[in-house]
Length: 67
Image (tube, rainbow, N blue to C red):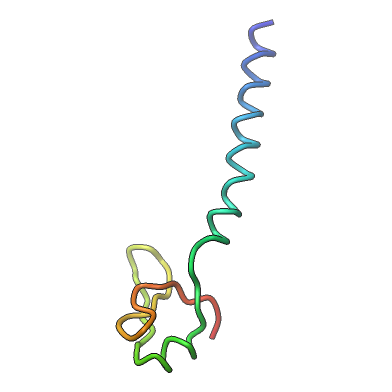
């Protein structure tokens, strides 16, 4: 019986985490490479995060979503 309860609780936790990840990604500000460059910034790859980021300009520190 305790195995079933543990499995059910694990399933609930994983379902809750799976539902929150897309929401967190959608909430992150993201711009295009063109927007970054027009604002006076440059697009740089940040190796520690593995993401392209706008550096300087009007969108400093924001993630790049498309070119």
